[in-house]
Amino acid sequence: MKVLYCVSEAVPYVKTGGLADVAGSLPGALRDLGHEVRLVLPRYRPIPRENLTPLFPLRIEVGGAPVSGLVLEGRSPSGIPVYFVDCPRFFDRGGLYGEGGRDYPDNLLRFAFFSRAAVAIAAQAFPPDLVHCNDWHTGLIPAYLHQRERAGQRSWPTLLTIHNIGMQGLFPAAEFPGLGLLEDYFGPDGLEFWGKVNCLRAGLVFADVLNTVSETYAKEIQTAEFGAGLEGLLSRRSRDLFGVLNGVDYGQWDPRVDAHLPARYGPDDLDGKRFCKRALQQDGGLEPLPYAPLLGMVSRLTDQKGCDLVAAVLPALLKQGVQFVLLGTGDPRYHALFSHLARTHPRQVVAALTFDEPLAHRIEAGADLFLMPSRYEPSGLNQLYSLRYATIPVVRRTGGLADSVVDATPEAVDDGTATGFVFDDYTPPAFLAALDRALSAFRDPVLWRRIQQAGMRADFSWGRSAGRYAALYREAVGRRVGGLAGETA
Image (cartoon, rainbow, N blue to C red; front, side):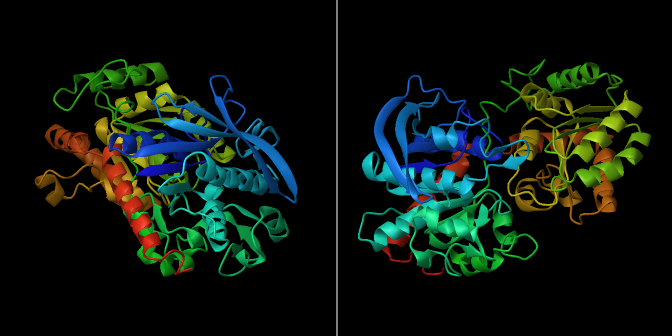
């Protein structure tokens, strides 16, 4: 199948979050299954023009005036063809979506231009069997394709992947006329959301098939608690909504081959993990105690990631002699809190308030437990890394965490499926109870090794997820043939 994969960021070019990791891995996994996949990406300032081939010029009306650009073609390091939408007015900037903590005020026009450029690429360079859209930045593509079909022009089936329902691309209604859509696309059956333009809603209404990044999250976002105001629409389209858990690039995240580690190891020989723990302790100035439980966390420092729960329980844990290594950036109040704990407990707490990819790998390898007490988590990747690195995750039962970590109940331990410790209520006592269970298991070497090895055997490779996406592509194409597109809007 020929797939045009449209996304606002992708490694190794640019990255602000997990979306870029997915876009950097999934196209290659689909290619390995025999599909012809081409990526569409804005050419941001950090992406050099050298070695890119000009294909055709763009002249697209957005905001009531024509804007010029150019489509360039290159290849990713893994050999995936990439179409870069080159428009200096919109993408030659210091950031991807904003600077200094503020979004760019013209983001609607920027990604309207990008979306219409993607449609032009489908029409002029690579007619696909399906267009795969990702998040609000490409949510307008299904609407533009729907309008083409109404006008008797060629269109293509679409799949929209929701990576985080909370990020919707909301803009003032006054900006709608600049999109180049007919007036009836703004309304309760279109892009309108409480008087604003909602780009994600455009995709939810007009895409043939929808998916999000775990089966549990697909159910959660149909409820008021998790749906961010779109739960009604998602419930109406429930028969078109699927969940596919994100995968892991084991070429980058596997302790048997990880170049960032001071020692390598695998499920049959964990001596290297003990060395990694000692190195992490020494590098952070912690007491090099092999039997002190070492807790790790690599995260954005926000309430969504459960930082408030960690802050609530950590003082009690430190009194029990645990150690804690944190890597991440985010809310200034958490910077201050974890910095204070590191200053007052320098032999027990390390707070690296930065982005450091090698350190992220060393924490995954050196920690005994990995903390992910998220308020919500669409998919999550670090719990998957932790399983492969024999670092037992402690997670809340939500989203992808619920779908990927098996709680160490006595029954699960007995049948060899237990891979971590899971709690339900988003409260400090519930989180602390799960940690107490984990620390008790840590003191039993036989039990601990059994849980570690079950996690290391788990397969969350991208090949598995790519197969699910290929099935959704066939579903979307079949529904278009059957005339079902948009009927539940």
